[in-house]
Length: 117
Image 1 (cartoon, rainbow, N blue to C red):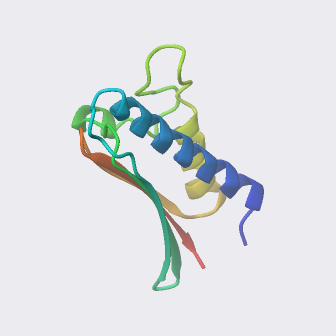
Image 2 (image 1 turned 180 degrees about the vertical axis):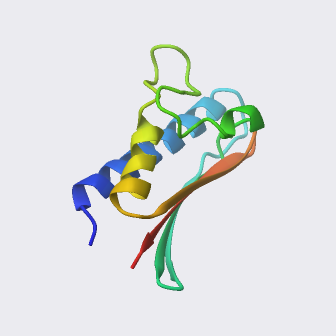
Image 3 (image 1 turned 180 degrees about the horizontal axis):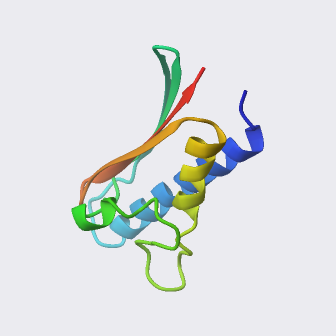
């Protein structure tokens, strides 16, 4: 069983971050076509949700920190650093799931949420 409101908050946060990343990249490139893709699938007793974007990506040095409270990749005043931290806690502690990030700077990011089905 999941708490729909909590998972809804997680997804809203992931969507907002993806939209932010593609908007940032769109301002830097003329021929850029922003793309945010949401995928779901069931694998070996788990439900996997992926939110992929072709935005700015996350650097290697920042990737290890993005689930920490108060850490943000956004400029001062544009992010609290709580969104991914709270999302991570909701998924892992509140629902016994997993949350991971795959990202290449200037290529894009995929955030993956796995929950038991």
